[in-house]
Length: 617
View 1 (spheres, rainbow, N blue to C red):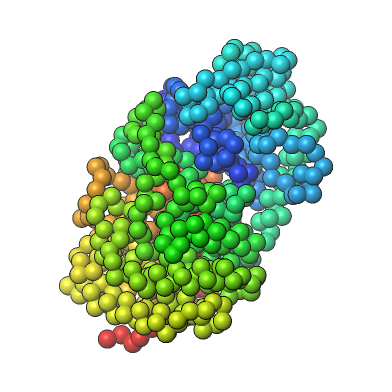
View 2: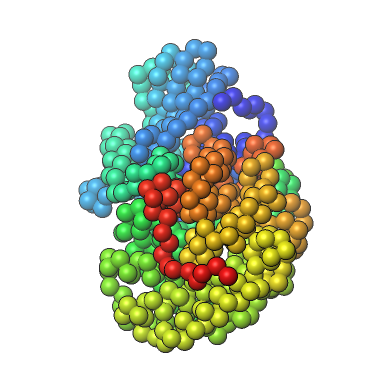
């Protein structure tokens, strides 16, 4: 792939993701680390060129002559390899963060965080250049950089220290460091960036870096070998699983919706949000898919986080929490940053935490039930009381309006999807009580759930347009209603659900991709791209209805929005063929897994649903 190096801002899909389940970095096809937050994924950036080309900072290693670039993840790993081809040679840039077992970590003194980059000459001789331009605190903080030796520089701000060790000579100024060198066939050059906080910097040797590299490859392959899935689109599922693992935050068990903030849903527009938080919805959906794929330990970590974080506000739930499970602070704008391709504002924080979103109650209790019913670990008394209290709360509030799954910045409404997910919460809670997992008034929960079912079937379905609608007694189509058969509210083969799928495909599809909604004022200016998870929901619903060929068609078209490394953004512009929104987006990859599993079940003849539904009236 060739890119014009004079054009500011690579395309969003030009980035690959690396990480260590604590923080992560975006690496462009031009070999530039343009996004890295330290020490954690939700900390201020030290490299943030993706949201301000001049002020953000970056760390680039790239040929100093014209080149073409291609890349891949090394098989079965989260190690990114970018290959540059020039008229006189070929060179590979390998980027990774360490991933090691606890036993391996115990044998060496390690930096708090580290980013390792290898330059391997594959053919001929290629002139290269290195530019190390740290800009802490989202580009607003000053940095003091000094050379320790001709091969080592230290960049510091207050208690934060980054130490770059290079196999080539560096020329340092007080604010950056640069180098030029040749990559020669058969040679490996190492660049180790170590980060420390209020402690002595750890300087790593070449031999140690090589050892960590081999340990990292082994760790990822061993971890991925737990996957029990062997169905259609296995490679895409495995890449999605690895991406979700990179978005997880190991110290707490949370999963970040995305590693970035303010990548726009519309270029030049205001639809720019901070997604470095854990949404209850995303974490709960990850639990369900990880349980089915064989990753019980990760599912257990997510469940523990869910029950810990929600206990702080229970029985009421925030839609999202920080990665450590706290209530987020208020949203603020970083006015000094121009935003990706001048898409302002750049936001830190997310006001959606203040909203009421009824669907998260269903996602939480559904995920907890599926996990606890597996017998992987017993539920403790406090957890059981927490779940029961949340179910009681849902029974009290489900008749009230909410802000809905799409977090519209407008007055609450009676969203059909929200009511269905309240039904999901109460139905699972009642089942857990019947199974002896929790104690509670199962009969009351069942009565309330049945009332919700009757309400949705009578007022959530519009016979004139032949579809379930966004709100009760409404007429607006909404792709979130494709989840009704996925959560078990209605059989996908029910004529009402089939006609809903048909209506959504006919009226919400743009160039083969499914939009969230149409004809709905969400309280924001401008337009957005297609929301990728919606296409995967349609594929899953078609598969559950037994329309496997149609499900595969929708799935495979949705996958054309993935980049060359298999990563999916939040949204997509089909006309421009360009990713939009924060990247990569966990929910898009969760939707991919959901759809692949549904197709696999359908192809095996397993179209039976979790529950029996009332007969079609």
